[in-house]
Image (tube, rainbow, N blue to C red):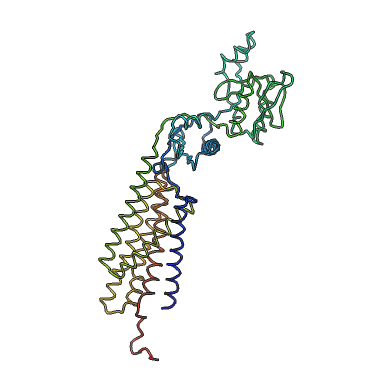
Length: 442
């Protein structure tokens, strides 16, 4: 029995330390729970990406690049814990024609400001003028006006801001030290730029920023090294703005805003209070039921349930898990799973007691007989949570699935390991001896 008492003390002590850590960090604000948009307040934006110019096989990587770029742009403005996710729907994968990007900005309740932060990111593209456009230029004496009128005659080359390594401010001495934009591409972009210039000497290469034709120089020779410049009628402030935006991410494809939602801080606080109350009520009602129905065993189950709660809250902080209203619902649901395991164990133990076994043997057999049911029911829940998380189309569903999965895994530990150890530690009876033998007295 001393072995069980030792481990019971260890489990309770570790749980107490973990509980103090959770409470202290939450109180001091050094490591608070990460709350989702519905609990903390903020702005929810949904963008639709135009993937018409991207090959089907490259859409997934292009969307990931888009996500990374917007995340860098949002982080630049100091938004706390932004969530930027590519929406993937359906068991068979996302529809290539409906690629969406979800942007959640906690604490940002000004929709216009949020849209501005995302929309200021420029789209940089290099396009070749078509043969028809070349003929129109040759027949005109006003090249600049002609270029603007034929901006729709440029053809895609595949060279975009996605391949940009960095941009810099330079000054052209030939233009009276006017500021220009220097570009340096990564290896992929440098190879493609060299190929385009090598195969199209004499053609016009249009440089588009946010869909507007900025410059249209003629290609005189192959350009290697992956470097280029953009000249134009720019002011110093304009060049600084463009360079900054390009360095923090040029969008690899155009995006359009299709949905906005703002959740005020007051509404978020109300949701947090309601969620906490729901969790406390659920715990209290379940604890009361266990104590009334199973008495001493129920009291131990409540202790194991408290350990379960502390471990979950600790994991939510350490992983960290973004808690949403749906996620808290998953947590409350997993409390029921934990209680269900205890009930199975106690009912099996009752059956063994009716057969005349002492408490120790009845507990041991009760845990043994209940384990297969607990294992199978929890494994089915784990599989469901994994499938739900993998195929979920929104962060809300993913959050629910993740919290539920963590809860089920921890419930197996608390119901089987913690409850078992504490009950055996408090049991006054030892295992019965084989028939015909008796305990020796000292």
